[in-house]
Length: 282
Picture 1 (cartoon, rainbow, N blue to C red):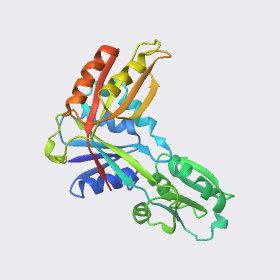
Picture 2: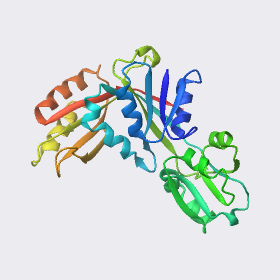
Picture 3: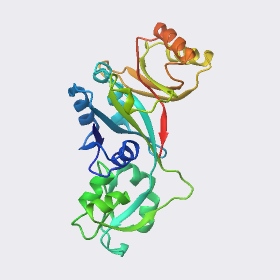
Picture 4: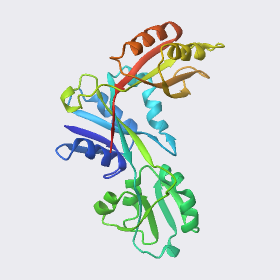
């Protein structure tokens, strides 16, 4: 099986994919999330899945992923979210010298930079912060930069042969990232866990009128369905209109969810599910 993942080797997407599916597969690095989705759409053989970042406890949603999920291209592609993965993220300071006074640049993905911004400003006050596409990209970038450091994984340090200077910890904060496993809806089910779906993600749009969104939420309330996430994004085709991505508790086997989705069709301009899935934690 081919597994497409975001970032250079040993990004956290790569790490969680290997923890989930093990070493006996072909892992293929992709530098953008849209590249993963495009390759999944083009692949007519049911031998390829993709793993993409979705949300971080501190930095919030990964909007590059969200914008793909709410686009008609995804809806018409026959792709779906099959699993949600949670990874407890451990960030390390990678570099060539333990003398932090000499550090001139610090590289990482924007989320670790945001998460550890106070630490960076305290311990690396003179370093220029440079954001890159992934933490593994940051590790790759400093291989030959003597006075630079990266915030990345210990696996990236080992892979790119860079010293681990220290683990960076914020004891009062949890750093957890969620990822989606995406594949064709007809992908052989044997590769996935035989677990009941716990959540369902739905994309919809409503008329631009008072109470339109409230009507949708009221249906969920009356059915006793918990809304765990709601996001609005610009409509891909209509100016100053918006689409909503919601996550609700319960899978498509749940009668309340089935009834609610059927009723929602009467109160929305468009509506479709993009996945019904369970969560695995690592």
